[in-house]
Length: 213
Image (tube, rainbow, N blue to C red; front, side, top):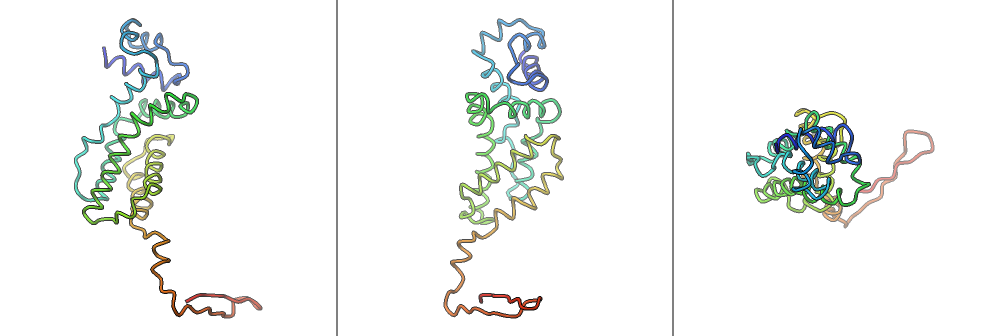
C-alpha cells in the first residue's frame, strides 16, 4: 500500500500539480480510502515531501572512486537515477509551483535539496584534502554556482539529462571553475615594480593600442 500511495502522489504531481493535489485524488489513484492518509500525514505538503524524500536517490549511498572528475559525474548520475519519466515530471511540476507555497519551498530545500548539495560539498572537500583542488576555491559563491548548475540540469530541464550531458557540464564548466585561480589572487601575485605603459599604432589609421607590461 505504501508503494501504491507513493506512485499515486508522483502521478498526481505530474498530472495536476501540487496546487490541485488532494487526499481524495491520491486515495482514488492508489485504490485506498482517505483515512490511512489522514492518519499518517497532517496535510498534502507533508505527504508530498515525505514521498519525494523516499523516491530520491540517497547521495550517501554513492560509492566514491577517489577521483574528482569521476566522482562528480558518478554522484550526479546517481542522484538523477530516480528522476526519469513521470518522476522527473513530478519534480519539475513541484518546483514550478513551489514559490507560491513558502512552507513547501522551505521544506523542499531543507529535506530534498540540502542533502544532495551537502554530499556534493563534502565530495569537493575530500578532493581538496587530497590536493586535487585548492581549498581556496571552495568559496560560498563557487559552491552556489555548482549547486545551481546541477539543479538546473537535473531538475529544471524539460528532458532528462544523459550521461553525456552531465560529462560535458563537468568538463566544460564545473572542473574549470574549481581549478581556476581567483582573479584577485592572480592580480595580487603580479609584480608591481617596473610597470610600463606601451603605446603602439593600431590596425586602423589614427588608432593606438595601450598595453601594460
